[in-house]
Image (cartoon, rainbow, N blue to C red; front, side):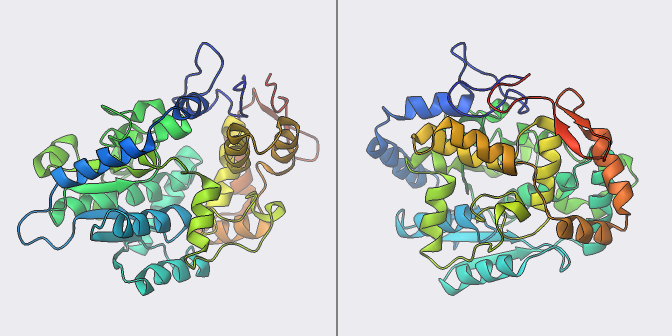
Length: 375
């Protein structure tokens, strides 16, 4: 395990490769972005949306997946008010036991601002069973729900003949999942190669789920994309100020609610991420035990690149809060998928990266690595 020389991104992130100079892909892109002509990029985007037109009789110019949080609220408003387009918003609805009141309020906020929103709601019992199977097979309960999240937008785009999909950040350039890189920085049609989507849904069929029950979790094929002329465009590639904090500042000014709990409860420094449900913070904890980084690392990395935080402060925050998750979220998750806490922790411990962590005599997971240094 080694760290980027500029930020605190470790090379344990799936599908990431550091440069010869020791920069992670996100820092390498950030350094290159300092010389970008953002006006020229905006002109490129204007030409793109002019070329990708809706068909005769179609009401919407484009489609955007939304949770009502910081990123999707900013995208929806920017596409409508800056580009002058008519977007259809698609929101994946979690079951009542999972969805947060903040998430409900934030989607309502988008509706109140005049957007058309389609609510996609997969069958709750199948959702719960798939979540349980995801946890047992991959120690990642979100494996199935993320497939539904990613699949709902292109499925509706194909069904309603809307050829243009806006997505937020380019995960290859702005996060480091290099397998998603398309023909250029804004082409998102290789999103199917992401660490989340590349696993596919075959495991659901192998687990005995009929094809008709898992349709919401099936990402359209390349042939279906091409047949419908679907193009995904990463909007973040065109915005020079795209970041966790900037997007939150923009969206909060437009009425979104954020979390009141501190990072000692959620592992989220600012309470501005994953607002639509409560268990993602727990998944960040599990990710931390698998790869040695979580949500706090992502926050401080942006500030390290921007020069608004020093490395010592960043290391201190990561050491203190990365991998934190309140017991109340773990308890409610175990109750939902009907497992015991002991079963939960036995699976988490089994999935722990034993090169990075060890379990002490009290059953607590302890780092073997030094944050900012590695092994």
